[in-house]
Length: 502
Image 1 (cartoon, helix red, strand yellow):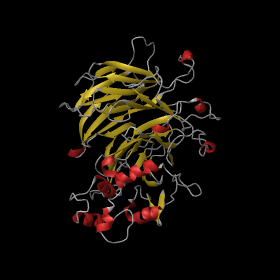
Image 2: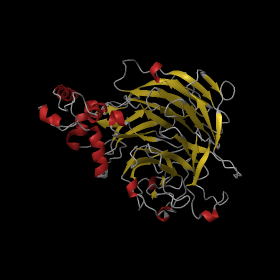
Image 3: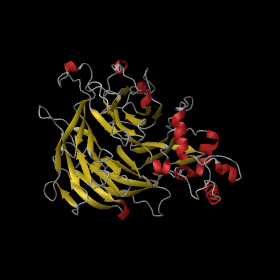
Image 4: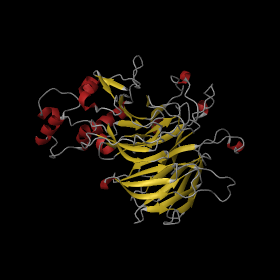
């Protein structure tokens, strides 16, 4: 049992219940339901989120004010579907249809929590899984060298099964090009491989049935190898940005077929002492473009810092436009809101933080040496005495707690703009669950339970209430609302479950 609301136990049977049935308790008068494990805990109310992000979220997911003028009745949120439809028939918008905010107000209450339905089951750990931008494809990458691309519109049929080339340890990341013609994949190697997704070949074995072209991200003068944790296509598909194990951000020009930029982004201490033996390097675990322009890049690292890089105005080599301080441990993942202003980060301090880059600083000295205990997230539980610590210079807008970030680089995201107005934040977790938080209230609105090992990645369909989670137990499953009337197809009972160690 994970969440209780109105006396109803949620997730007792391995699935979560939609909050539609208890929406009046969640939204009436702006009251928040206090839940087991919620970031909104008794005696510790969730701090008021920045007024601007609250307003922006409400503008994207709130109903039109004219609705209350045309449709009589008690004014409360959320507005019922019947009242919304009656308002549309009264043409309250003057356009004869729902606005994008009205659409989000309707769809955002239908959380993808029913199920799960089995998409795939392997004996290998799942590390990455993402929908394409239009939701027609789904990509899952596994430690056992396989990357599978499923055609969502054709019943989740495997469109391409890719056997990765020169894999070191695992597939660390994948990224689809904006036109969905190409996929790049990375591992603990400086070479990124690119595959033609649109070809007719289903079984794509590297340099056997298809060419997997290697893009070398290392410089000619490099004397050692490194791995790549994160890679993203630019919106125009002309560039790749990557974060590496050697403290650096790389930008690769696909048209020129060469490395165009290396930023020594997260070195700890003096660059004059830069060397591997001095251990002054901090892994860049995650990078992403801030918006469609491609000018701003966000990065997160094991130095506990999030940094903002403006390619238009490098004042000095390897100097960021600003730094965001607040996490007590390393950053595992970043997701941009897409507006060039807000983003979220998942941290090994067991928190997600929401950031406004207008609050960034140029001073990082207050960040170093804050921890006074020994801890390694790869094999140790997070110390109980550290759970309520707060960085004295925390500049984040909000902090979300309840999930667990251990053993691997757990990922978090904003919910889709089209269907929810980015009203939620969702994340995988080491405790084998998926957590969904309300951006404004901080409340856990759903906890999804099925997996038996860490959920490293999960993805919400860009248009429909469908969420797919993938885990180290090898299962890739989908959650829906309201569902298709079918009985959920769960994992095979005969399957031998394994105890995983990193």
